Every structure is written in C-alpha cells, then in structure tokens.
Amino acid sequence: MADAVTPPRGMRDFLPADKARRERVLAIIRDVYRRHGFDEIETPVLEDSARLHAGLGGDNEKLAFAVMKRGLSVTDLHAAAEPLELADLGLRFDLTVPLARYYATHRAELPSVFRAIQIAPVWRAERPQKGRYRQFVQCDIDIVGESSIRAEAELVLASLDALDELGLSDAIVRVNDRRLLFGMLTDFGFAPEDFDAVLITIDKLDKLGPEGVVAELGERTGSAAAIEAFRAFLMRPQTREYLPYSERAIRTALPEGADPDVVAELVALGTAVAAGRGSGAEVPLRFDPFLVRGMGYYTGPIFEVAHPSVPYSLGGGGRYDGMIGRFLGDDVPATGFSLGFERLVDLVDVPDESGADAVALLHDADAPLAELLALKAAVLATGSRVRLAPRIRNTKRQLDELAAEGFTRFAMVGTEALADPTTLELRPLA
Image 1 (tube, rainbow, N blue to C red):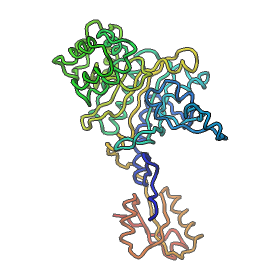
Image 2 (image 1 turned 60 degrees about the vertical axis):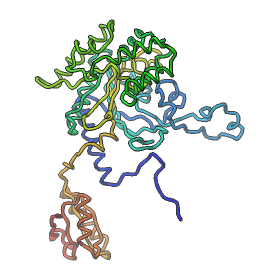
Image 3 (image 1 turned 180 degrees about the vertical axis):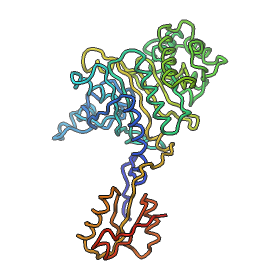
Image 4 (image 1 turned 90 degrees about the vertical axis):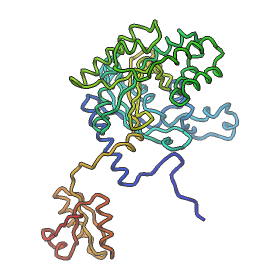
C-alpha cells in the first residue's frame, strides 16, 4: 500500500475556498490596522540562531526549528557539545523578536515613534493537537519608541476595532501589569529567583483552579509562608471579573501597598480606551491581578483578549521595553498586541463581499485554443473573473460545482461565440 501523501505533522494544506476565506479575514484585520495609522513591514522567515536563542523568547525558544550549517563534516557532528552548535539559522517562532532586530537594523530610516503591522506565518515545534499547529499565522501590531500608556491605548483600540469588524463586538481585554505581579510576589515573600517558576504556576489558574495552583507552588518552591500568604489572598471572596474597570476596582483586586504609579497608568488606560470607544460605550476592559502571559520579556502592562463564546483567549500582548536594547545597546520602549488568527478564522463568519462577477465558459474539448483565448480576453475586458472549462456529460454536476466555487454566470460556447464574442449568451448560476 502506498504511503499517505499528507503535509508534515502540525502543518496544513488549504483548499481554494478555505484560502479565500482566510484572506478575507486577513484583509479586514489589515484594513483596520492601516486605518489606525500602522504601516506593514516584512521580515525574513529565518533569523540568526544566536538571536533566536538570546533569552528573549521565553519557553518558545525551546520550540524553535533550527537550520543546520552547510558543509558540516562527520567530525563537526561528533564534536558538537549540543545540537544548537550545528545551527546558524532558525525559523522565527514569533514576530516580536524579528521586529526588534528589524528596528535595530533600520532605526535611522524609521520615525521616532514607529507603528508596525506584521501579518505572517511563524513556526514552532509544538506537539500537534487540536488547535495547535507547527505553522500558523500571527497578526501583530507594535508601537516602538513610545514609553507612555498612549501606546497601549492605541493598540487596544485598534485590536478591539478589528474584532468588531469581524463580528466579535462582545470581546473584552483582560489587563494586568508585570510590575504589579512582581510587587505582589515580593509582598507575599517569594524570593526573586523563584518569580519565574511561581508565575508559570499562577498562569495555570484557569486550568488547575486555586487549590491546584497552591499545591503546585508547594512543589516548585519551599517558601511555605509565601505560599500561605498567596493562598489567603487567592481565596478571598472576590471575583476575577472586576467591574467596572476603575481605580477602585483595581485597588480592591490588589494587595495593600500596590505601586500607585502603576495603578494610575492602568486607570489612565481605561479612561483613554473609553474616550476612543465613544460616548456611552462600555469600557471593554477587565482588570485581572492573576493574568500573567507566558513570555518572559514583558516588562509592564499585559493584555489578553477574551470572548464569551470560547474558553480560550483570542490574542494578547504587552510591553517589552528591554528587548530592542539587547540589539542596540540602549533601551527603546516598545509594546505590542497580537490577534490569534487561527482561532479567529475558525470562529468568525465573514461573507464574500467582493461582488466580482465570475464567469465560466463551458466549451467543447476540441474547440480551437486561439479562438477560446480571444473569447476569454473579451469577457475579461468587462471586468469579470473568467474560467475556461471543458464541458462534461453531467452538466448539472459541473454547474453545481462552479456555483460552489463562487462563479455567478456561465455560457455554453458555440461556434458563433468563438467567431463573434458579442453573441455570447451569459446565464446566471443558481
């Protein structure tokens, strides 16, 4: 028996209808981002291996696909202490690290505050499963060079507008700040060297529940007093949906002594988003003191998109002020927001509103090629999309298939139409 001819695990082919639908969703997102003043850029799918493994990508670095150096000898293979010594390039695992390198490369040619769109595939060596792929598209917008909360407000508003255009107007954005998280862990008594492990566990709160998180913390760190302080805070009779988004709600959700400057920034974010959404509109923000986001490079406000129709997030992002400085030697403020395209495209219903007339010309298999192409050119000149299709015996099935592919009209091509295109009779496809 022949082997199945399929794509590599975790990667997919898309049939024409699926591809067209994906492009319609991408077009909506692109259009909204451009209207909000962002400019699209493109970066290579490959980056230097050392850059991809510079400690900027968190756990995603472990999932990067490496590209082996050319011309390696057997001796080189045996001499390598670890596999990455054999690689000089790697496939990008996200679009943020390439953007940081891009800005460092082109800083002199870019505006002082740079608003970037990146919509492109990325690759991660995930364990393939439902909803997790090894190749997938990310839709990123980033603002580089703006240190104030203004950048976060612009990103949130652009992302919410894109979701509105896709029919997901009920989406909300959960908000927290890494500085508040670190302050909370310090107040509870966790050692700084334990912060990363503690945050990884807190990030599982939705999955494990409060008791599960406390139990796992006991396995990850030996600080019993800190765990007990965190448990007491976690078990308070509070809800994670703090409504409305206000200074009082944020302060109520945090331990006493939370950084007032950071709280003031988050309050200002809510005020700005409210103004940007229009008078009378509900502010679609929720403060969540346990929102973590997995990337280790976040330094300030962080976000995650939630929608009532699904239990998973539809995107997220945050501020990563320290990343670009790793390449330039001096710090450059930056913050970004990414929509989870693969989840969105499966969720939204975007009709084909192109309005383009698509015509199928059904002809005999032995019809003269030159005359057929001349006829096709004449119909193309009217602005229609045109396909030449040899007529088959089961005409009804052929017409049904053409209608399913989006064709709107058809014609049976006879000798008169080949000689004089003005005699072509076009009929609607039901």
